[in-house]
Image (cartoon, rainbow, N blue to C red; front, top):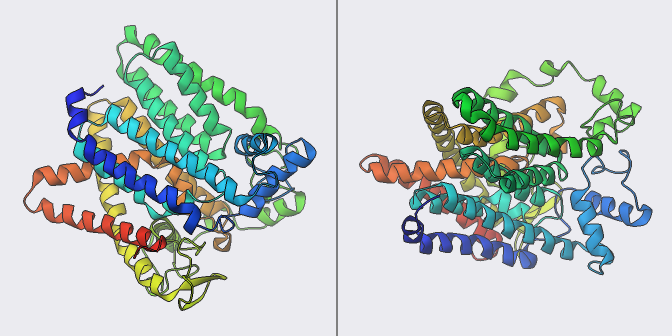
Length: 453
């Protein structure tokens, strides 16, 4: 726990960063079209199926039927209470924004619990609140937003449980947070290996006399969460041809045949796609399909609306054209083009800071920090695996939003790096200034999306 004096000294700046982030969420219903999110019709169809049949949809019912039922069951429960009788997307958007504000609050709570540097806390809050794919995604109707909330909560509670011998209450909360994540989206399974990293390193580094008190309770909590959720994932086992975690391609023998007809796993993507930092014509045309390769698509979809899902709706009378089947204002292009170098700068600095902090955590035998960092690494590897297994870029298999389940540690890493740059002074201030300008570029894009610029 941090001292109250250390927490008070930066409270005003932290509150300002939090209010700025929340302001974008509160304004979203007036600017973000609730009917234009990723697969919104399919998510609503899942809810409607539960309402009509009082059962979960079969795997082949729609694109989203593969997902665990927590989010859809919650929306159905609210529907039964009289909210959104026809699953109106505008009302469901409000629910997403509630999850978003809760996530920002949980993240801030975690920062004030574990990050000693107030300077770092402010920068971490700013990036977490202003990242374009998150500002955009928070206004969408889907299970991603609660998924991001439960992922952030689980990471924080995992760190809390690994810092010292956890109480029964801490262990129960840890297990519940894991269960919520697992019951919301398949991404939750990545918490398992991350927890194994933390628990395994704790076992290795702790004196024998402390191992049981420090490890047994959180290990049992995590195991119970996975055991409870497993039947939900296995419900499609027979339909999917023996897959516990099926995709859309596992819904039928015909769809599985399409996947089986693809080249072997390691031949589905070229080395250039996976490793070359090529960007194609996306600098000029920052929308799908102009980025070439995994990393350019990931950068463009994290720091900009690469798939043009109406993050920036053309204003009345504004000149626009069709990009990826949807209108895009000409004036918006300059903002989107600017976010690419800004995003590259932030991503590269975050990667360097991540490596430095991971090595320091190894030297200091900080199992909790390494477990948290593992979530971010595993989410990135999971995204890479998905892009290789399903080599169909036209289906949007690479999205920055897919990573946000595990990016809370990356926001912290970037914030700690910014605080370090500022303290070092001298030539390091130039790097600090470059990062600050990059963040301001993201803020400008967000403000443009809300018709302020």
